[in-house]
Image 1 (cartoon, rainbow, N blue to C red):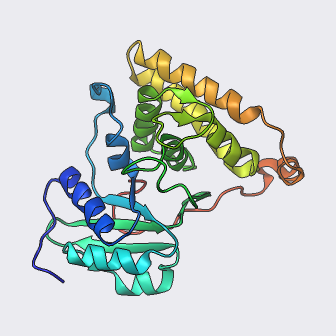
Image 2 (cartoon, rainbow, N blue to C red):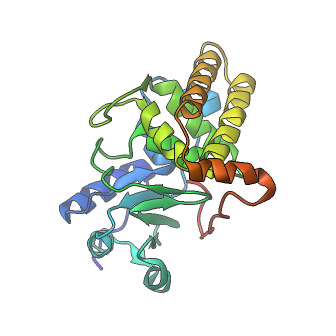
Length: 258
C-alpha cells in the first residue's frame, strides 16, 4: 500500500486507474457509466445527464495479479475474501477515502448473461467497443433507468456499422448479431430491452434525439433478427419463456449496473 489516495473527482480517478493498470502491463478497459461518458461526442441533453458512483473495469483472464499490484499502488484496498473465492472472474477493491469501489471483471462481463471479451480489450482505447458497451447495458433483465440512459447515449452518439471494429468509434451490428445469434436467451433479453429503450427515447427525449435513437434501435433489432440461428438456438426457442433464460446477477456493494 502506498500513501496515495484516490482522487475525489471520479472521472479523473478513472483516468488514473487506466494509466496505473497500463504501467503494470494490464489491458484494463472501462465499462459502466464512466465508459459511456467517454463517448459523449455530442452535447448531452438534461434527460441523459447522470452521476457516477463507482469505477468498473474489465481485464484479461491472466491479469489478476497485475491488476492487484496496480490498484494497491494507487491506494485501493482489496476485498481479500471475495477475490480469493471469485478472482478468476471478478474482483473488488475499495477506495476508503471517497467511499467508492472498483469492480473488476476478468475476461468476461457476466450479469444476466455472459459476454466473452477474449481478444476484445484492445480494439479501441480506454473502454470496450461501443457494441460491447451496448451489450453490457442491454443484457440486464430488470433494466433500470441508468442503463436506459446509458444505452440511449451510446446509440445517440454512434453511427451503426458493419465489418471490423478495431479503431472504429461506431456500434458494430455484426458484433451484436454474433452474440445474439449464438444464444436464444441473449437475443430475447436484448430484444426486450431494445423495445424498452425505444419507449424510453420516445417518452424522455426531444427531437431529433428521440427519432435518432428509435431508428437505430429498430436497425439493431433487424440486424439481430437477420442471421441464421443454430440448432441449439432453435431448440431453446421452442422452450421459450417457460424456463429461465438468464441468470440473476450477483449484487455486491456499490451501485447496481454501474
